[in-house]
Image (tube, rainbow, N blue to C red; front, side, top):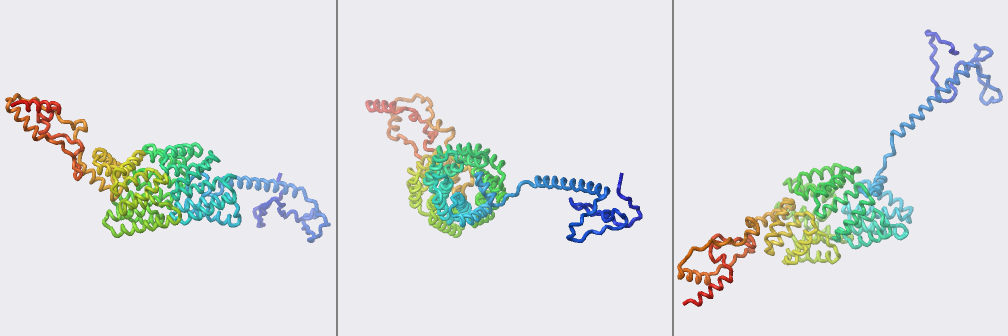
Length: 587
């Protein structure tokens, strides 16, 4: 039963306002005096609290109860909606500092912008907390990564100072192993692989299950040419840290051992599973490098382009793209890509590649400009404690002083820097300096690692050709051209010329180079046979030797048809000696 009075349809009085909240709504009926329903109730003056309010009517009580129930329902529904909306929004989007920290925690690269934000955040913090060892270790390691990815070597000095401050605040033995890991990463970036090994192995002895030490150990062992230790460290890293970082390291290991199919499959899995843009770009870049080494420049360009679309700050992909564009004879695009790479990531190896491209185009002045720039970069890096002897020696061997290249690389070898790259460069420098026999040992060592590098095969083939070892020389030059026909704008044409100069191998293989058996001789008069034997003794033929200047013949050439058909060609030397003795006894 409705206790509210009904309003007629003709009434022009405005309807009652809806409830506005949990408080009691103002009901117009409450303004009526219960003693006289027609007389309005006068509210007491403000502050007259001693006067009790009139008791509510039954109708008012019922209405208040109804409004209270509705208000409670509205509040409960609002609360539920708010909770559901909060759950739908998900967690707060992480900022650049949080993203950089998450990447470091996962063992993945951070974007340059996020890395910049992390450096700024930690610098501000340690200004007011100079004894915070973990923050100092994080800042120092971030400086190393920034210098490595921007090629600004001045940050290495800042990194060293900051990491030492961290160890002063808390020693590594007291739980500050991350500062030691940072120093190992710094040593690797400066190409001081022995120091990196010492720092890394110190951490491994203290914390064998600290996964963060194994990437720096892998880099150190690889720089020292210790494949066995690098393999063990990679396997251990994969046990402790699953996911994309472990897949990336495993792909690099397979690549260095020449296991192309395994390297490609693992690199593809890493690219498929990568989620963060910097991590994805690094995986795509690796696929581009593998395609380039296989001699597939179109695929390489596609992968490098994908890496740059994913992370525009992955400047190494600009240089990789330029290298592949050269192979496709898109020279103008390649020049632009190289110039952009050098502007954003000024590494000396890019200056060398661009200089050689200019030289291949006959632009010798531009080539000299890049070579001078390379020397300036190497000198600046040396001031920052970075050893760029390898790239400088490669330049000197081909475009400068080969003896200086040999001296630089012997110094690297004495430091136990015995990677495949150093062995190949030393072998080639020795050959260019006129010491091909010694150079052969190092060039062969680089090839024996199993790495599929067209440049290594080319160097080894040329050295073997110089030493007149024509069969292996032909095989290695063919491998260089087959592996990557455009591995260098200067060296690839020379590889084809050297292969053409060697000519085709003997038909049938080495087993058919022996003289054919002679036909049975026809009976001849005794006097005619004696005269023939005397002529053979006077004009005994000699075996032909390959000419060094024109090595188109095989080292063991097949005899000519005329020589093979000669009766004396098939006789053993003992039989010839017996016949000569009998002839001397005859009158």
